[in-house]
Length: 339
Ligand code: KG4
Ligand code: ZN
Image (cartoon, rainbow, N blue to C red; front, side):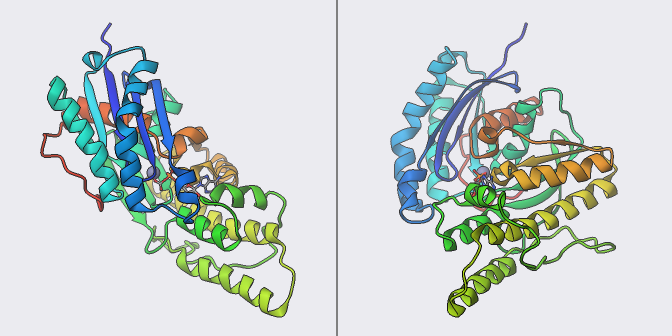
């Protein structure tokens, strides 16, 4: 039988990751070296620190990925690497490493779009999943609604005009004094709160008849900030769980409405969640419920494949390789790369 092994490298933000994936779908190793603790004291990712840490980590992480897969570089058929979007200095470390290995060992190189990688994490988690489907990519940097027609055809339906969904979670969490990144803490706090306690705004809400797939979360962020400031000025006690639950409900309602709108309009019967915020329990529950009402199946990856990892990049690289989408050694980091 033919075995195709893909080695992939991901360094777009604050995780240095390398993975080996067999035949596009089977993870042999997925090493993730997180820098979160380093950045936590600054309340967010410091690009310069991220780049330096990637330089230290990238080769050991690649070695570990090969060792855990019990193979050597000579066994690799394709090298995939994230070349954007992301922090330019961070992207360059992965791209330079991938190019050096590809050149030295004469292995085909495939540059991967990070967002496409997030979507493809679903193919690793659900080995029978095939396009077409509607994908909602919600991460710290992105909020995009995409119609994936087949493995190589991505139709961008809409995206955020300002903050990404994860960014909104992190900023609210920071105001509420949770550690960075705050999304999981809001998720947890919301479990014991009342989502109807405070009526936060639903921007571009996607009500009936309104067919735009754009998002906006900066107004919601200001509304939560104002609510907390007003309470502090009045000396009123704030129920943090209620604030978390009400904020989360506002985000989830808009995300779910627009996603289901896209599902109805496209006529596809599958919907997938991708990106770090896909780990959010309220989003999973609500979208799952609404999809089921429409006879549509919801897919999402396990938490480790929702946040940044190289296995998803390897999966995407494999399908690009099959489609003949090979990069040359001029590949460069593109911080603002689009779909
Ligand atoms: O995909 P990712 O690792 O990085 C980017 O490419 O941006 O996503 C990280 C984001 C952070 O904003 C984090 O707070 C958020 O995902 N996140 C969550 C949850 N888990 C991670 N947001 C809400 N609820 C969660 N359970
Ligand atoms: Zn990401």
